[in-house]
Length: 198
Image: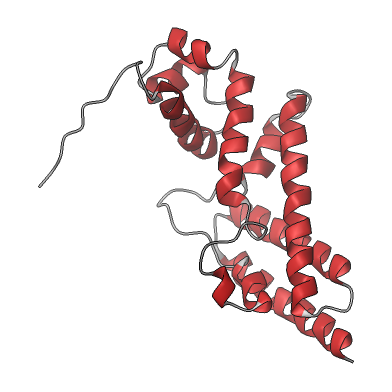
């Protein structure tokens, strides 16, 4: 049975629809390629309504990044099943390839935003930097819990490995770099933990 849902225009929930449209369009098509008119159309609102909720496109970009941080905060804010897994397995889970969307791989939305905002959007850069530092801190916390001899070093190395896998898989449109990064992460982990227990 198919259910037809009539698309609302304006009215209640417009702000959330704008954010939902931003999540999809900014990530798939890019921030710079998505104009205000397209964003408004994707949210089923008028441009006037969009500007009533956000004073500028840059403000939409900033709120989009704050909004998706909730879903990209792992490992600091892990999924509900994380408590049942060891810190080592939680670290290795970071290197699972992203689920297939049927389209080209797009990588990290925060990295993408930083690249697209180059030379402008200073608030965007601040949000991205805060997220990346928080991400590294989360990996360091897991590395410490896993028994690494130098958790700060290991956490930083793993975060860089993660960034490299995301960038390479995007450039090649291939998930293979994630498998290679996971093997490298295992090697780094085993070495750091063996030194920590020595």
